[in-house]
Length: 117
Image (cartoon, rainbow, N blue to C red; front, side, top):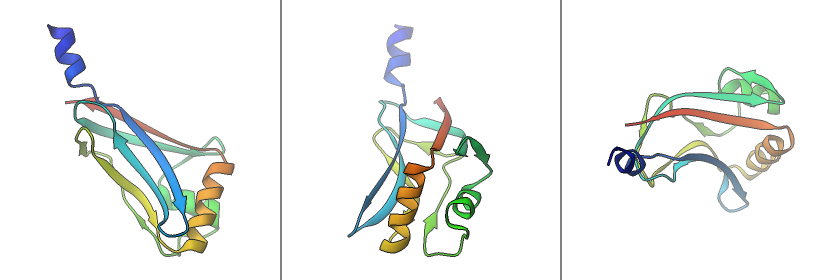
């Protein structure tokens, strides 16, 4: 019975980045599990160097943080099962394409530490 209860509350978080010319670029986290997840912390690495936050990632990728974008954090948030949250949204096609391909080609890692509620 306890095992069934654990599996019924099992969150499974995945992150993904997508790009297309009409919508721009997004990096989002989705809970594909069957229970809510409490996100404790997030660690980001670019080319095996730990990054303190998204601004440090953008500075290293683009040489600046001054370009049109929205960014957010999921730390200390509850992500319900089946829900997703955008971490980065860039509508400007020029910047969106550049960030998307830089993240892919420069070994970007995004680790999410979470707990089941």
